[in-house]
Length: 153
Image (cartoon, rainbow, N blue to C red; front, side, top):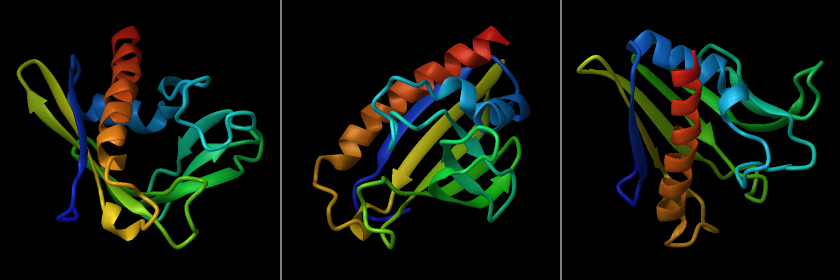
């Protein structure tokens, strides 16, 4: 992660790390709720999808049949039950600008602690000094939706 400010959020969920990882990745289309401000194309976006391997895309899907849409980033690390790292960019950033998101899945008591660290803001010149803090709040809200999905399983 970058030495500059990092957006962080964490939650504990009542399942094992492998299940927590699976819900985060395979079920992201369920817990990343539509109608929230976390979409690049809110009128076109239908769901988010990870392509489950290193080099796979994280896509805001606009066409459910083809899976095409806005490419948010690429998977850099895919370690089921342990760690996920992917690049991230917003639709209003230059194509060359991206940040990095690391998600860790660590055993905690009877469940799993899921920690998101979103850094690399120094690589996005348009990112203001408040952007990491704003993303911390956003990730915390998204992890709340994620927790609801885990609990509903």
